[in-house]
Image (cartoon, rainbow, N blue to C red; front, side):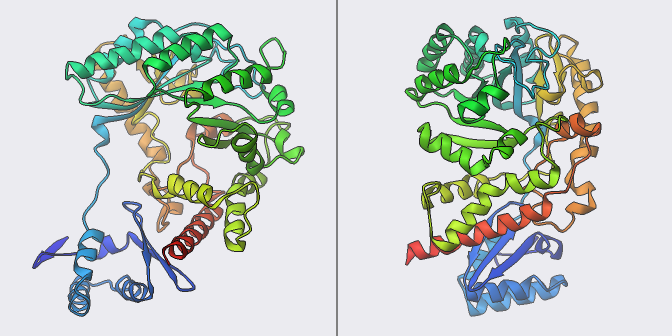
Length: 468
């Protein structure tokens, strides 16, 4: 990046980060590096269309100067647009610390990859294990963005949730850390009234805790997929607990595991979102519909069907936007929120997944893994937090270097020239459980690219309409 009279002149290779899309009178300029998105009018469409074709740096400079002489306001636009940007220093920021505080679970989900929540070792995490985990990770990282309490069922070990939060509070007040992390509890809510009441008391003291509840939809589906370990139905208890949580601004999110069981009875992702938003009154909760991870053909869908189905909600959004025919499933506000949360607020990442790089899971014994899905599989055990700090640091560096060779998108020719290169994600752990290797799959790339563009164009059209 050169600067001439206060004007930042982009290098030719920086311009390659920009993609221009046009539909009718609307234009979108997408910055692949930062994921910044700009709505363009006809004048700007023509300017950027010409600029992005230029390959010689001197010609770029001449073009930019000429256009600014014609349209002076372009100077500030160009300076904002072409500022250098780089990824956050990943070596000092731990994005997620996932604590398996309970390797016990009252449920017996059909598709559970964790041996009914025990990971082969029914146990609870001890306080000393949390303390040692923080000591070890803060010897490498300056901050933790999120602490995830996972299981099994983490609400069987509420004392440890409270202890962990208080430990971070202490570190913060002593200025050992500069900011406190976000706290997320992942629960199946198949717990007793006493357990829930104990958790409610903790929520009253720490309302910043966010709860994600696993629930698979209506009673007949949920009870089939997520019964209690003894085979009894769990739906009524889960919904009873869910309704109590609603009184405390929870849950933050619902996670639905989508299966062939849903598909065979005609339940689509949009139906599930409608069910939780409208019938259960969770209008402020995020609803995530994720594909089941299973080799069982009675549970998993063929990949071609799964890809289409998991974009069905967005496809229906686009249709509703184009036709202006919002039914009870949708509202314009809901559609805009979906786009703003899932696209416009996305942070760029050069990895399909940062497990084993900036995200780690600790089991009840202190073993370190890149992901909770891989707990108990020895080849993925990075080390143990009870080992020396020197060995801990070496184990993390060695594993991260090995993992980057698999998950760094720039290593794959399918990602070259794709405007979503720093946007999309993948799950190497799921790939391993399903195929035996962690290599990324690219089966959904084309449909994802098209859906993103269509959603953005419809969003911009409706935004422009709203401003008139």
